[in-house]
Figure (cartoon, rainbow, N blue to C red):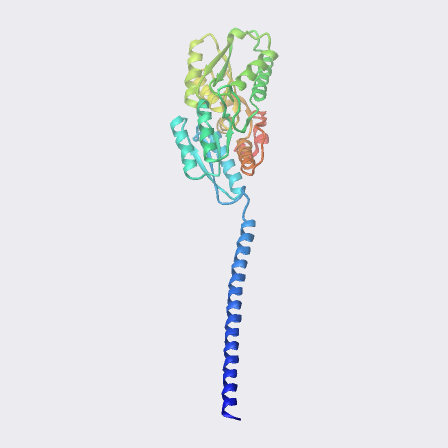
Length: 362
């Protein structure tokens, strides 16, 4: 081969080698870039899948607050336990707060729930005139709120948040009917020394219908009973204040030797029992509770003959606690629950309370 031909061949070979090298680099770069792109795409798809598989609003690790006006009372403790179980069933945690019948403590608890990014609030407010403030705070924070027992309402008495509680007027009627039967069965009509006392809580909207139902049904069933001997004693829902209120009326009417007493909640009627005992009038008295959660203690500890608590309208704190949480989760999930969910009651006595109340009678 001539020298010039050899040089041309060498140049051609080098050129082809460079083209091959450049080609290889280009393919490798494209391959590497494609792999990176594929990896990123897969990561995005995985993230999207994980996002779509995330728990719905009703489940997860959120916090539900239960803020109760008198968290040391048996009713609210039992209601809170039921609410806690319902919340944990949904995968969330429950924070129980006792507002201690204090408006300041209550609003502080609402603020704490908001500060801790609560998923929702179930609450029994100590002063219904604060309802709008509580609802506005929760609404501004985007936190659903449900009222338990005592409604969250405006100045006209209209509910401004869903409510779960007892069928107040009907339950009052049940108590009034039972007392009327007791009066007839014990030949107490027309007796000058027989008086009736209704324990009231006139500042609490859910309690007013209870007293109204009690009086309306009793007077309907015993029209001949002297209505001038039907007295009222207002209290704040605690046993101590119930005792004081009842004692005041009992002391003011020494002519009454046989008292028929019912009220707005169990604590008030238990307070009345203690007042009757102090006055030495418990033996012939008839007290009908409202709730059954303290009446059962009277019967368990003293027996039927050891207490003037003769009956009680039993309704389950579990029903209200569970029900309030169920309604709250409807709100959390974007549903529209009923504004009112009412729980009915049944009258229990020392003869049937264990059978009717089951575990609640323990």
